Image 1: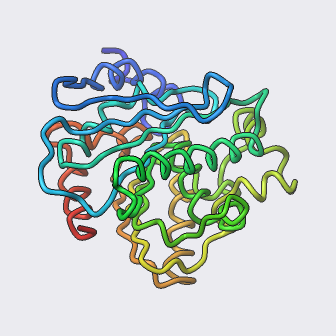
Image 2: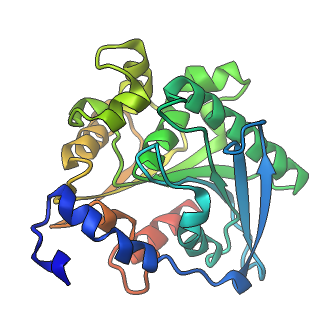
Length: 282
């Protein structure tokens, strides 16, 4: 395959490996159920709830997971394999969607994240899961928006919530400090111009603070050509120096952007670490 000859840490290498990545996103639909919920009039304002057909031990947490795709692309359905990794361990998994740039930027997306969170909690109550805490997580852009939900507590307060509902945060190949991201149309379409209020608000790094009971798992590759390692490393370092939040940071040597989201594959070296981390929360 030609992509074997394309050097890592290049965008060409990342894009050349996308077809293989999507081909590996295989799902066994016989093991879980899927229900769709809407929380707005726009067709992208919805959640998927995936639940194991044969529940194992009851879990103390429910997972709310956001897909990757650079904020502009991707959808929950493409990341069902990630959800199945969790449902196979007994978790109920919500997967969130939101309106997209360039028409809808950070402010609208943040509104959708809050509406999606409220809908998640509503469904959890209906299903008598409201005693459980939430683990938020996501791949790439999904990691960014998930960390924004948790740390930007002023947005939570506007919808009548607080950070006590969260127990964990899973961050995979995420642009967690936008100041460390290179300039791009993708970034400006989402967050706005650097030094703007919108850019500041879209950067979860700016809102890191102590949240009691929260645990963080972060994975990132040294050869990520889409999101520099520093965009995650600086985020983790600030948590470690400014808070008492436990963080497990797994750096993948020579790992690419996509390598940070391959833990659903059997035998992947991140899968065991992530599973053990989840068990510490239970």
